[in-house]
Length: 314
Image: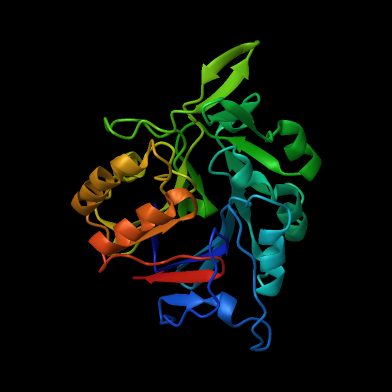
């Protein structure tokens, strides 16, 4: 992987927004508090995630988009309000095929306006109808499908990557399928899909993350939901890249709900052993879990929200 001088991650949409945040510094910029000529126009939050990743090295800059949010409204609206130059985006990637990460696909690709732009995606993202069972009655909550037809209509060039795949000329690594090695990160217990009329447990094999190598400081790992387990994800990033030092772990850690909150403590223990300088839980990590991570790792913790731009510099 290329050694990078800077990695900037601008969150187009996350589950949270606070226009009164006052913790801006050289690394953290809450763009939602100052947009367009200094006016305090709010941006949107929703249950979804989308981020613009900008890498810098040797005077050159590369840009890509990771995930597309839940709707066709929030991320595109925020990109406009924040003045994001969408035409600079050179490639796009999808962390997995759930609706809270692909909902704004058509709209954001349209804003980029580059026919044939590369889309990296695990082939499992196109899986047949997916759903979760909720409540005592096991109500099926269907997830809208991410389809090859959608991709073809949008005019993008698909790279179906089951294994690690370099992007932006080696600035970014799309991890592909992440091995499940820890005993405690078993994934959502209520996720299913249908195939040939039969119901099957959905292990969400398409879940993946992006990895960057910040010069002298180590890996920056950006997940979508980390259904594979955030510890599994970081361990695999170290294995694939051969780089043991971890600078930042950011993204959804999927530690919400009664089945997953019990593993928060073990997750924190394992993250401590991985020793990242920064921990940035987003999106589906869940309020209780985010608060606990902040309480137990206060020197490492960064609160993320829609419009946050984080700059990790070598």
